[in-house]
Image (cartoon, rainbow, N blue to C red; front, top):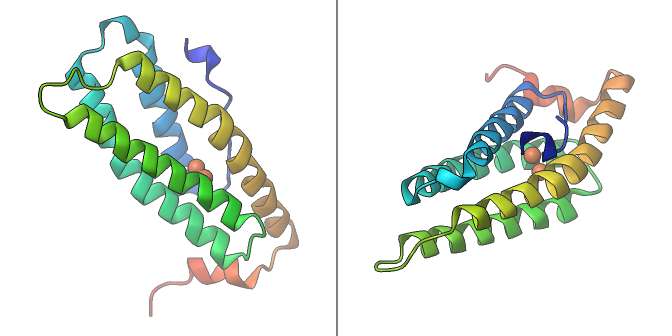
Length: 149
Ligand SMILES: [Fe+2]
Ligand SMILES: [Fe+2]
């Protein structure tokens, strides 16, 4: 099952890359034993995803804004849609007297995200950052790395 997750994307910003790696690790671990996943496992993954999404999307969006990336709005729209879906899933999971979210539904949704967003949209963004690094002086990029005064 793990091999069906697309290959790693290196954006070149360590915190973002580490967040992608952790997301893939979590998704792969969840998928490996999908048949035995409990409601509690689903809740743990959803709560990780809520923390991930806020921190990770914030980092990516800040980097895109600072570098005036032309694909920013399209990219952010995908993040916003993910958050909307995630909140809907979380509400479904927590609804009293409901069965919660089926592990396979959560897995299918997360795999689609990894394959369609992380492997495509994030890769396009990564190529843009690569181009900036090749120039060696993107002023808005280096601003991010300046120590706080
Ligand atoms: Fe990402
Ligand atoms: Fe993204």
